Length: 194
Ligand code: FE
Image 1 (tube, rainbow, N blue to C red):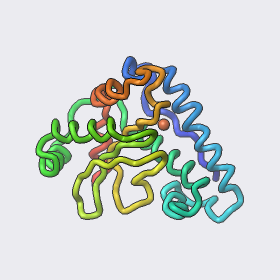
Image 2 (image 1 turned 90 degrees about the vertical axis):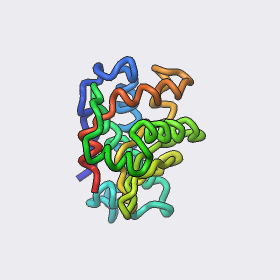
Image 3 (image 1 turned 180 degrees about the vertical axis):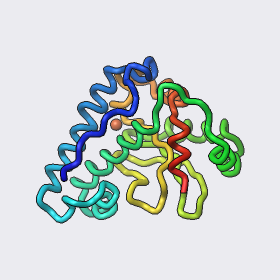
């Protein structure tokens, strides 16, 4: 079965002005769709055709960038959309305790995440991950790199490719990163904990 483009799990009008429906029409409807289409074309009829996205990522990492980049970006974007909501709310009790344990406070976690998102050079992703030993860490990933298909569990991603913010924020990545916290779907992030 080829992969299909997942629907956005929210009304794209409801995340404006942080991210407009116009941005989603390109970011989801063109960029994400292209990753899915290119992945399907690359794996058609081969031994990866019946594997999951994470299995394909793990099998091609460092081996086959043409397949890896499209599989990783398909997974990264699906996780990103599922991490967003019209209204953010607050992290739940368990996640709050873990963020306090590993960063000092929820606010200090956000400061660490913001700094990583702002300092990532060029295209890529900032993630909160849970390592195999249960620690929470903020990581930078260049281009399509991803915690998907690795020992780290991806909890919360932010896409800092320019296609993510250029329509609404132009070159101001800082205003895009700052507005992110108003649209994090904390309930979904908490479900991803091991
Ligand atoms: Fe993107």
